[in-house]
Amino acid sequence: MEYKDYYNILEVEKKSTQDEIKRSYRKLARKYHPDVNKAPNAEEPFKEIGEAYTVLKDPEKRSAYDQLGENWRQGQDFTPPPNWDAGYEFSFQERQDAQQFSDFFENLFGRSDTGKGAYHRQGREFHADGEDHFAKILINLEDTYYGTTKTITLQVSGLDENGRLMVRPHTLNVRIPKGVIEGQRIRLAGKGGPPLGRGSHGDLYLEIILAPHRIFKVDKRDIYMELPITPWEAALGASVKVPILANTVSLKVPPDSQTGKKIRLKGKGLPGKSSGDCYVTFKIITPKAETEEAKKIYREMASKMNFNPRAELQ
Image (cartoon, rainbow, N blue to C red; front, side, top):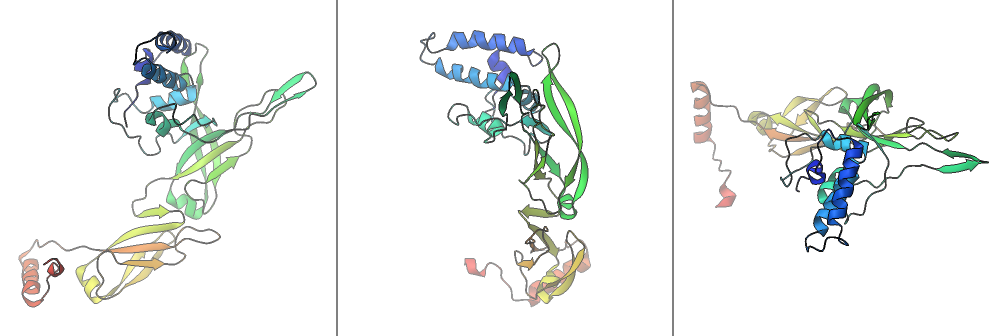
């Protein structure tokens, strides 16, 4: 996927005001509009200009786009970092036509959500409900296992009195329900956009993203871990201690176990109406032959054990 330098496309600086961006967009849009510019390749830059303006005219999109960094150039191969927009608060917006904009735009900003934004009148007064807002938050696996209350700070984008982009923090206390899984949303009623008149405040929806864990991988409520075992534990069988989320359990390694053998610990995953399981996969770790004694043992094994792991390949 190619990186799009939206500032370069609109011929503006990163510090440009919204008015400067609008003026440059209008100038370029007139220049490349297919009704005006009859060059055979005019339509492509016209689409790029429209896409760039869609991002840079919106303080929320522009602020999130800016934090991707300044090390990318137009046309470079680009993959968005995982959860690149976590911690940025967005208004819900309708998903754009998938064929209208590039893959770059779709990967960054393609959404399928719409907010309330309900409008109504009472007599001559005009009222509007506040927009619903959306943000991704990173939490630890332990947070969802036990449930907790966290103080989180979101980045909310807007414009200052000079029309320049500004970002302000939005700090709030959030209760993380026990057993919430990745992709689920926590609704904070009335914490979204402000209303007009006597409308209602919008809501804030927080999508749960699990931070990478040093031991476990997660799939919905199931958790997976790779357990190192020694060659003699694998060959002879053993009882080993396994750290799971709640505590440490004793696990029996069956004799003649091989790397890749999987053991299921029922109900030891994430809690819920139906708790997930913990899947333990064995990985045999061979000690290094760093001493003469260790080398002697390996030589004895080689001479006394009639074993060829490549026999089936012959």
